[in-house]
Image (tube, rainbow, N blue to C red):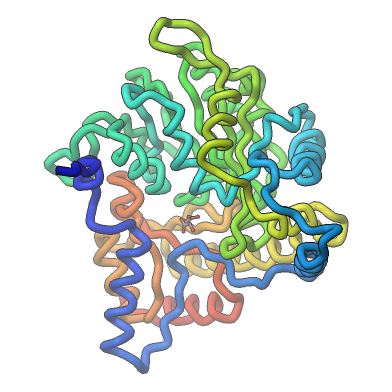
Length: 411
Ligand code: MLT
């Protein structure tokens, strides 16, 4: 008898975005005439910029010649990319890192899920609530989440840190000590951000309580305000307590190409069962060299080009395009009396559903009556109930059209 991992049976039937996709497909089949605008999943719509395409063409050609062909690359990523990352994403902000602290991967989602491999299942996990569902679901799979409560929303072993309009979406420090804390800033899904002072409080908390922070900085490229940190390592002491996850998906339109990286500082030490300190960088390296054969050479050349002068400039234009959508959504929806959060330093708008509508009710009505897809806040966690997420990653014309449909909508 072959036994399965029972933890998988505890999960809801499907991943949030697959669930939404199914609902939208069913609706479209019944209403083929409806022109549905998707402002749901945070997927980019702008094509890859020319500087990156050119670098990829060159890399493809290299693969076709014996002299420049590349087979297996380093599991941690090519040095040419690691060096660019250090120089542009860290040194420019006063953070020094060594190349062997950077692990290039196929996107933040994989590493955020895989990091649990090197952490005991006995660890207590805390998440901000609402939260990117991957953090919770991967801990359910690993057996770290406990049991789902009767309300169908809370896991018994997970510490929830509510982020709502009442606390201005700034989570309070936990009252019961978690071992692992997931933070995502600028935040998905609320589109809000933490100031340097606020993030420093979390680092200080982790230092005092010997907690580990898993910091998802996938949206840092959308930061506009000076006082918002791009990396957790801008905070004093963070290298001792934090692992940072970065992605080219939203920054450079790589949702289909796949590339990201994870920073595991050598200063970060956790404990073995005997209470001795163990370096985490070594463990993650061991995990990656065994289970991962590196991101493709072509994709890493593409990522490298994202840092070239031309690449940086072209990417900036795409980011500005999306942030124009964010501003437009925010200002127009505020004008019609909706309560809106986020959208200043992140490509997400967090809408308070009007008239006390539940998140899913609002989703259904927006789909059926306006033919617009968004993401129900409650899908990201219990404190997301009564909220709704819209993404700024749509095409500009679609965003304008969606706004005009909502403006005419009799709610
Ligand atoms: C989202 O819509 O929250 C994101 O696109 C999901 C992801 O990045 O995997």
